[in-house]
Length: 255
Image 1 (cartoon, one colour):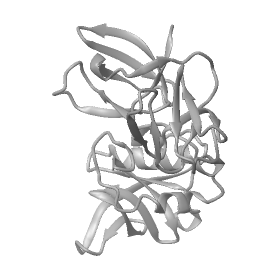
Image 2: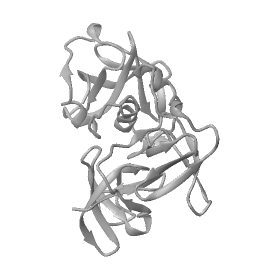
Image 3: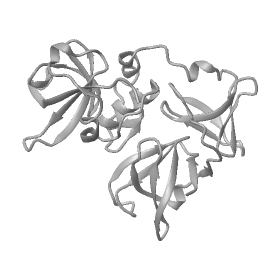
């Protein structure tokens, strides 16, 4: 089965073959996928990064055959770059590049070459900070259902992005994240970076955040924000009450 690499900032991944269908997620620049079905001008694809399936419009394809099995290098910040035709793209944190050449200020995505400004360096790809430090870079990023990039992100996309920048793969959806890693029994035992998951009145996992420090959670709810957390859940001082009920805590230690 042929593998392709996304060559636009992102492509919406929809539940069904229609623009009216819910956006479940996004395929980011440099991420790979395979085409598994096709209806009209829509392709059903599966992503290699998180094994997510959904539909993309062929007008959004802007891709290239992947060519090899090399892993992409994840950007930790936005990067201005240019296509071969000279038009510009602004890639966001979480996008992936291949074969970077810091002397020629260029990188690859599939068979396509992209050029950058003179400031392109290894610092765009190396991470020496903590999970908590990475998460703080996205404070006030707006909430968008299905979003996975800093300019629009949902709760599970936010924690997945933070972990991706840190070189760790975690599943896409909060209910999947609730089954990842190992269980932590008590809030007092949490460490920065631990996932905290919340359920609704039916017991369904509906929200996820990340422990920032003792008693503080960072999460995407309206925007990426910091709130207090205790054994009951997230307490919103601005609303004077609890907004999310704590269900479980998971510690992710790597792939």
